[in-house]
Image (cartoon, rainbow, N blue to C red; front, top):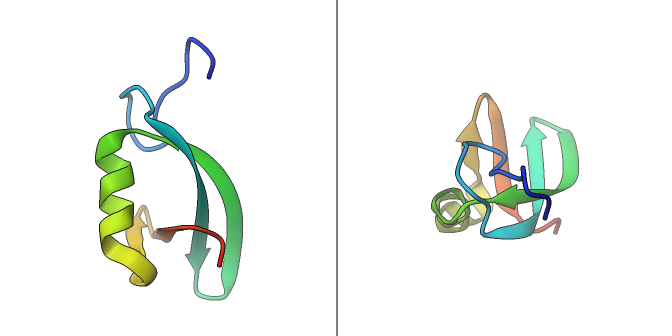
Length: 63
């Protein structure tokens, strides 16, 4: 983690680097993102249906 690292969705310090699947309809992206505890918790709570942010759905894991 670099000194200027921050959460992908806000300015908080990241808690962990997490494998994320981001999608809109059939367009899917596999990413690793730094997330703060708040956003990691939100994404984990939604499970397989995904957490919506700016028109894209996100879920933990690539499977």
